[in-house]
Image (cartoon, rainbow, N blue to C red):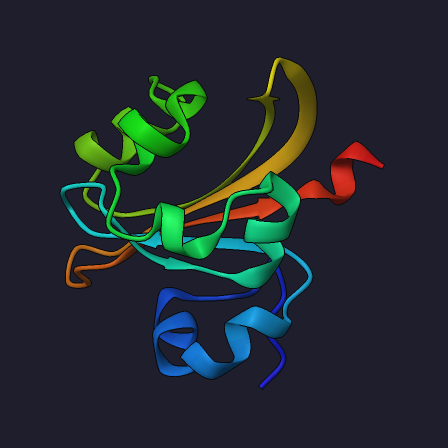
Length: 122
């Protein structure tokens, strides 16, 4: 299975957990309480945050408060289903990093996903 930023589905991510660390984009999976369940190696290295530090924490309050807004976090709360790619600027350690974010949420899946493509910053 070849997972790409543009074509990946929630079901593909859930059915291939052993492949997520090999991808060249960040994957953050979290539950309805925004607790991080999945944090792949690419994202851990890019954000310089160890997986052990992130797993179980609230994504929008403790890990990435720069995404706790109407463009990202509130969409996961307010929309039943999501599959959208947006241009975004992460405020990582006070250094702005342009990225593309993909917000994925299905009404019948308990895990939501935020995909981070840093190729936009190169």
